[in-house]
Amino acid sequence: MTDTAVHSASGEPVVDAFGRPLRSLRLSVTDRCNLRCAYCMPEENYVWLPREDVLTFEEMAALTGYFTDLGVDKVRLTGGEPLLRRDLPRLIRLLLQNHNINEIALTTNGILLSDQAEALYEAGLHRVTVSLDTLRPERFRQLTRRDEYARVLEGIESVCRIGFTGLKLDTVAIRGFNDDELVGLIEFGKHFRAEVRFIEYMDVGGANEWAPDKVLSRDAMLAILGKYYGKIDPMPERGSAPAQRFILPDGTTFGIIPSTTTPFCASCDRSRVTADGIWYRCLYATTGTDLRKPLRDGISGQEMHALIRAGWESRRDRGAEERKALERVGLREAGLIGIDRLREDPHLEMHARGG
Ligand code: SAM
Image (cartoon, rainbow, N blue to C red; front, top):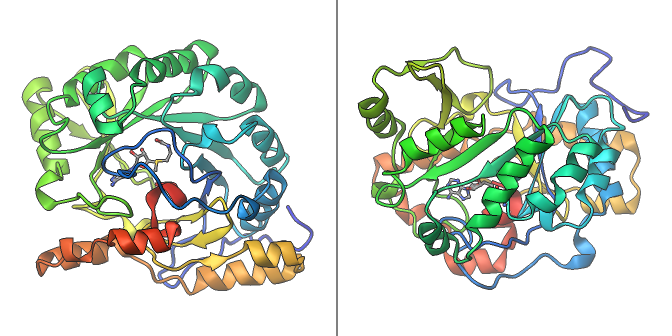
């Protein structure tokens, strides 16, 4: 806890305008990625964040400390591809000095995992989520524009070998692309004792090729899986977790994150800090709060707490619900952020704010 913690006096976390607590922080450690997934980063070249703007690990840990003072207890390291940031275990060790953090998780595409899994484990990383959309090397190459499928598999194997528990595999389910692999992915997950979570394709950031007919809805996924597995039962809700969890007749569990058809804005306790210290309170938000400048200007802890508290207390974002409302009036695709605007402000990209 930093010296000017403010929420702990009452023990109550700070809540936003709709009563949602500030609990989960996604820290993007880099905007760079070693894949070019069609639904996220389809261009070969991007306007990258200026190097001098990117926060040091010390700055990230300090900022995180202000957030944990106000209620955050879960931190997810993301990107871009977080494993491209050199010596990530050092950041994990720094963060673990903060005893208000209950969980540090990592979301990665897995390419560099086999080299780094051991060091991450030793540093104290709690959980790993690997993004994996297909089990077919050729499809992987087509989607990501890189021939790295084998290295992702090695990465997943290394996570299991080293002893991480609670491995998750996140799959963006896209109609006409990988809807024939849902069963295969669950079976693959069983083999690695990993829970698979299917994410509905979202119309965010660089997803300029998004179209409603590419969204494989939760109900469509359940229908496909039900045909193969038989009865699928929902599991009890877990508070603010975005995934709805289900159980198969053999006890295997899996999740669906239906962000597009059934947004979870009402319980969303997430916010994101980009690698250059801009704080976004919603994945769809077009503006954020610059925390880098005040941090580097040396404002007091009290002022930083006040800034974050005010930002959260005034939060009224419900971006995914608003997008869904646009769909009802046929305007969802028109609302996609154009490529020119994305070029002007890279912060609007998913790869800058961490997905
Ligand atoms: N590079 C890391 C990875 O691949 O996991 C972390 C960053 S990536 C932006 C985080 C997650 O966002 C990935 O699971 C990715 O599949 C997901 N994602 C990106 N664009 C998406 C979209 N348009 N719809 C749904 N999920 C998306």
